[in-house]
Amino acid sequence: MGSDQSEGYVVLAFDDERYLDIAANLALSLRRHDTRPVTVLINAAVNFKPAYADLFASVVTVPDDLALRGAMNKARLFALSPYERTLYVDADCLLFSPRIEFFWRKYRGHPFAVEGHKQCTGPAFACSLGEKDAAALCALLDLPFLTVFNAGVMYFERSEASRAVFDKVIAFYNGPHREAISYRYKHAGEYADEPFFAAALASLGIAPFEPPLTQRLQVTTPNLVEAAMDIDTGDLRLVKQAFGSKPQLWSGVVCHFCGLAPMNDYFRLADQLRREAKLPPMNRAVFEPVVLTAGQHAEHGTDDASSGV
Image (tube, rainbow, N blue to C red; front, side):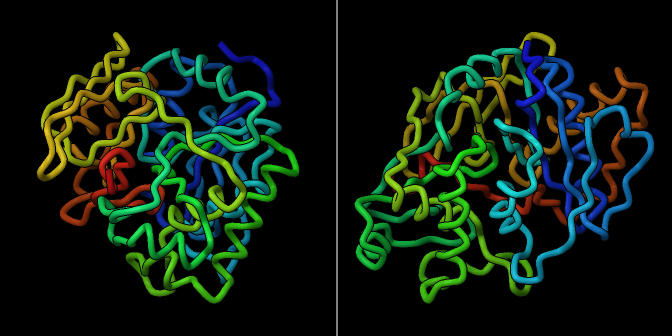
């Protein structure tokens, strides 16, 4: 269990109070297995609920940056995190196991760490709302590869090397190739963050960790066929099958319920956590029929192992 207060978790809950509700579920799952503090970042559109006060070590109301909307607010994390070593986690995730400690130890000393793969050909980000040709993008930006990953979980340390990643993301976003690198997201003026991070990391020579599918930090739910999800035993195993591919077994410690799917499993687990904390159950009606894409991720998310390999 971690007790070093220079290490902590950060979650975003901007623009919609439903994000705060699911961020609270994430915090409940983190508190079950770790003593590291959790900070939630909100903006003026979200009213913090006193019932959640004990779940977060700090609640930071962040002024809006009109140039960055939705998921692109992740580009501000270096400036906003209060920790020397930060694990950013999307609100639509739950922690299943104290084995998270293994990854804190594994990533320590790395300025920026993600799970994914290097890609220089084929369709990139194909499992999200957009798709880019990796070869064309590498040629345009003079990159040897793209660091393709799901940005629902990102580790970074307070160092100049880490700052350079976020600065590069902003530079790509503000540069002449914004439309070529990324794609318009769900709302006006909003762009997907992952392609900018993919290009920024590659431009700085930062490759992703590529663990076996059964030994991952983050497991995402796109392409899910069947799953075992038990927060009491820590069992998190998903059988996933992308179109045209064979089924694959994934397992890990953090489940990223992209778009809150599968909703039955997400709400079952969230309500279990809430009962334990004597909090009211989730109001599922406010999340349907429009699926909330927590952390501003696409309904289909980005399945890094199936986006172009």
